[in-house]
Each structure stands twice: as C-alpha cells, then as structure tokens.
Length: 288
Length: 260
Image (cartoon, rainbow over all chains, first blue to last red; front, side, top):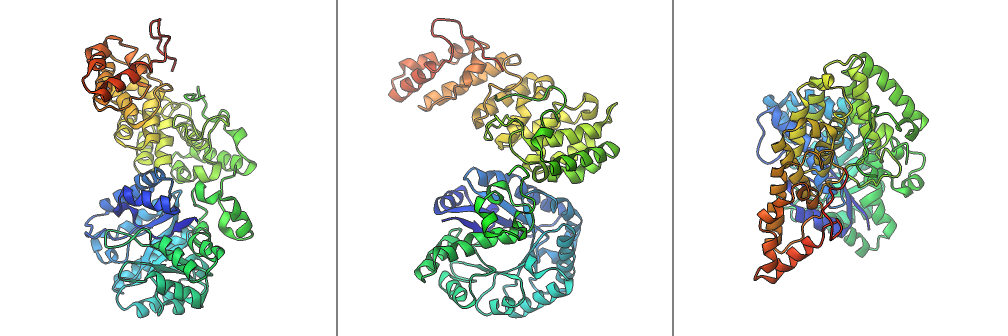
C-alpha cells in the first residue's frame, strides 16, 4: 500500500510519528502552512516557519523515507491580524520554490472582511504562480462557509479543477460535488470526520476527485488516520484500485498540477500510464 | 569517485547532461544573469526542476553527499555568469539566496563558493559556511565542510569543529578538501577524545577517525584509548579492540594518511 497524506502538519509531530507513518505505507505528504496554536505577532516568524517547511522539515521527513511537500500561505485565522498583512508581500518568493505544490491553506475562519481580502489576494497569487489551491472550510458555520467559499472560487475565475476544498463532511461534500473542485476529508479521533462516515460518503459520491487526510497537528489527532481509512474502505468492500485512487493517485494528480512534486513522487513510473494526457507530469525532470 | 570537484568551470560536463529544452533554458538564464545579477533570484529555485537533480557525473552515487549534482552545477554556473569578468561583488545576492533558500538552493550557494572569484564572494562566504556547519542537514554540512573554500578560509579551530561535526553526522572525511593537510593537532585530539568516549560507551567508532588521528599519531595514546584494552568492562575492551583493528594501513608499517 502507498499513501500520500495531502494535509498533515508534521512540524507539530515527532520522529516516532514519521517512523510509524513510514512503516504503515505513508510515502509522501503535503504540509500546508497554518496557525501554530500560539498567535504570531510579526512577519519574521512567518519567514522562519516557511523556511523550515521548505528546509528542515523536508530533510527530517527524508530521514524516514517520506517525501515532504508543502503549501504556503497566510492562514485564515491570522489573516485578521493587521500586523501580519505583509506576509502577503513575501509569499511570491516562496511560491516559486521546488516542493511548494499549492497555495494553502487559505479560506475562511470567521468570515470577516479581512479574510475576504486575504483569500481573494491569495487566489490571485495562485494564478500568478501557476499553483493549485488548498482551501480550508471553517469549523463553525461550516455549510454557510462552504457555500461562500465556492462563490469566491467561482468569482475568481480560477479553474475549479485546481481547487481542493478541505475538511468536508456528509453535509458539505454534496455542495462541492457538482462544482469541479476536488474534495477532501480530514479524519480525526473525535471531531471532523471519522473513518466510517468518510467511507459512507465515498460510497455515496464515488472516489473521483476525493482525498482523505489526517490533518494531524498539535491537537489530539492521529497521523495514521489515512491508513485506518484505507482499512475501513477495504472492510466496506472497496477494491485495492479504489483505495489507491483515494489515498495516492488523487493527491498526486491534484498537487501534480503544480509541476513541483519532488522526484520520489513525480518519477513514479505508473503515473504516465494512469494520468496520460493530463498535467501530472508537467515539470518532471528532463532526465527522468 | 567521491570528492571530485570542478577545477574551474562548473558548467564542465553539465551541458552534455541536459536535454535540448534544459540546455536552452540554461543558456537563456546565463545570459539574463550576466546582464543583471538579480535575474538569478527568480531562476535559482527552478534549477532542479528545469535541469535535473541527479549526479553531475553519471558514475557518481546519488546518495554520496559529496558528489556535485546537476542542479549544483547549474546554480554555480548562474552565479559565475552573474559575477562576470572582471568579477562584480555578489555578497548581498549570495547572502539572500542562501538565507531564503531551501536545502538544494543553500547547497548550490555553498558549492559555488569553490568556483567563484574571491572578489565576487567578498566577506560573506565564511559566514555562510559557518551557518551551514551549525545545521544538522548532512548535505549542507558536506557542502560547507568539504570544499576548497572551507579548507582555504576557515580558521584551525573552525576546521577542527567542522571535521568533528562530519564524524558525528556521518559525512565521509576522505573527500574533504581540508583532509589531510589542514588537520590540526587539536582536531586529532578532539577526534581521539571522541573515540575514547565511544569506546567507553561500548559503541563503534567511524573508521574515518583514522584520517584525523594519523596526522598526529600521539593523540590516540594521550586520550587513553589503548588503556581501554585493559578495561574491566568487557564491552569497553571489545570496542577498543574493534577500533584499533579497524586501522586501514598495513599492520607493520607507519600509518599512511589517505589522499583527499
């Protein structure tokens, strides 16, 4: 089994987690930039954080045979702090980096005017730097937040095939299903989604454009939830090909649109067969 | 062979490793860099995906932390083009590319120190090398400690720390340019103390320790390593025996420092 966890905050995790993930089949991850639990008060701490995502954390993951990618953004919660608005000015530098496979996570926390502005500005940055976008949907007032997210995406003119709407559940996934956006489920020990409910949504809506992540961070969470969801899919009589589609091929196809997947992932020999004709192999190494 | 480094032109052997599209991208980027050094800022992060990341010389092992890669050579070539002839001072550019670079970009800057004119590097080089030596990323430690630049510019004390760091994190010492000529007595003493510490713990010692110890043969005895053969603790006796038997030189001759 091979797993690409498309949303996990490894900065907040230990080497024990990397060991257990690698042993269970996790071979690649994407770490979106987010809120660290303790509010930041200056642009400088963001720079250090972004540098650690493209530097130290990538190296740390490689020690365990895991290919680490990241998404870079000003997160929705801290978009509300005027001291941090200048983060938008430093993003273009990071959005050119290797292994930066999306702008994210962006979107809404409390749906304030500040969040509107920062969300729109970052959708424009995604277009400028030819990157897909990982969109967080709010924990509170989720159905309204999801609808508003989809409105903003539509108004921005971005190709919905380059947008991944995250933290969905059985009530909000149907709102996204017809839009052409990709859909992700964060499987958590108590909150958000659990394995059984996620599998039920996959039964109802199918596996196309569907992703599953652990969203593991500094809170109570489990970096093996991707693996456990794969097991739950098998118990529910999904075949190996369906499991591989949701846990590997879909995240590779979505983030592959950046042309920035790192070699261990972008050189997968069967990608050419699976995704011939679409953009997954754009930017692959000339020598590959 | 590990430890090879370009004598002068980092593009030596590079063009033949590139396909036509990559060659054309590099040619354009070199022209832009020569016209305006700031053009390197945009090209620098893209070098790996545009040119490739494999070993510059096909025979090199991709896991060899000392081996130059295609993207190392591409980045060094861009910086040489930006320096021009006569060389412009690039200290601000080098500092900024390093500080805001990912691991591969930082390694590219460090590698370039070996092939840039001294006038282009200015005073910023040693600071970048020292920064990389403080990291725990073996590729950066190897690029910082391994090159001619470190051998020529670091103080004895800095080099001793750099060589010990290589031993600690598993960067092979054989290809390091400062070995053997700039291995100081203090570096050998520090290596001998590390050997003693490892033996006292019953652990194995990297065989590369000999590359430092053989430069100053008194260091080992001074650290009390031979006395460990008589330790009351069996694990210490065994570790001391394993280490002393690991010497790569002929048993009856004087130890011969290996070539760097």
